[in-house]
Amino acid sequence: MTELLSTHGLVARYGDFQALYDVDVAIDEGEIIALIGANGAGKSTFLRAVMGLLPVKPDMVSLDGRPIGGTPTDQMVQKGVAIVPEGRRLFTGMSVNDNLRVAIDQVGSRGRKGGWTLERVQQLFPILVEKGRVPVQNLSGGQQQMVSIGRALLCQPRLLLCDEISLGLAPKVIREIYAVLPEIRAQGTSIVLVEQDVGLAKSASDRLYCMLEGRVTLSGRSNDVTREQISEAYFGGGHAVV
Ligand SMILES: Nc1ncnc2c1ncn2[C@@H]1O[C@H](COP(=O)(O)OP(=O)(O)O)[C@@H](O)[C@H]1O
Ligand SMILES: [Mg+2]
Image (cartoon, rainbow, N blue to C red; front, side, top):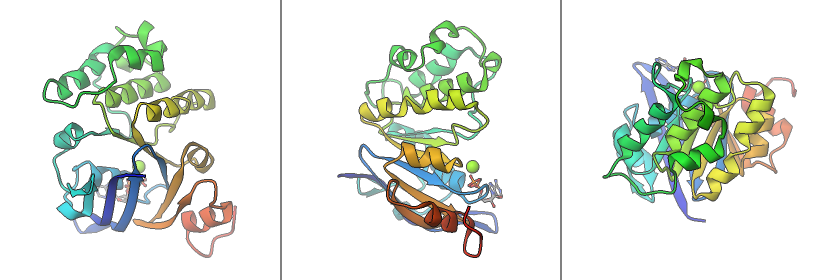
């Protein structure tokens, strides 16, 4: 397998507070990895650091084996890394289609050429056809999440970073959203799933990493890691196995 993106001793700070300690994560082309961990473990910070939203040293992040740490976010998008951010961050007051067009315009003529079009996103999430002219604030949470994923896909990513896309959604909607991940991968996009639902993360990924207090405490093939290993890595030593 060819490595797409990796981090090497990645550290990140908010002022005096160190939020990541020596994080080593690697994602191969075509892989789906899950990043699990309790609230505050550093999962979103990891994604932000990779996306150039926090200052990091160049050699702490590499893409295709080349150092790219600290590259500004818009350039990361041009290089093929897109994020579905925590809380979705859609443009309120704009319709579904206009939110999606922003991504098409952003990547634009100097952008990467890829297979994702408005029509392909609508095939993935058919409800977005009928909702095309509806302001995004009038959509359900699940529909908003679909727009957020669609917007990221229209940046033609080679790597899609998803920050808790299941949060606050009903189980049926979560299943609907997770069902499209294999299709996204089939299009040639690798995926990082940040997820608090361990069962969901495990079943949807090839490999997983668990974080605790800014450190990676477990990594392995999702089918191989045991509940006991996850429990220990998730909560730290000394906690009862759940
Ligand atoms: N903007 C910020 N300023 C200061 N501390 C922050 C900020 N964002 C997150 N943190 C802290 O960094 C740690 C990791 O947060 P975060 O990456 O959001 O965790 P997770 O996504 O795993 O829930 C937490 O202790 C959190 O309080
Ligand atoms: Mg988070």
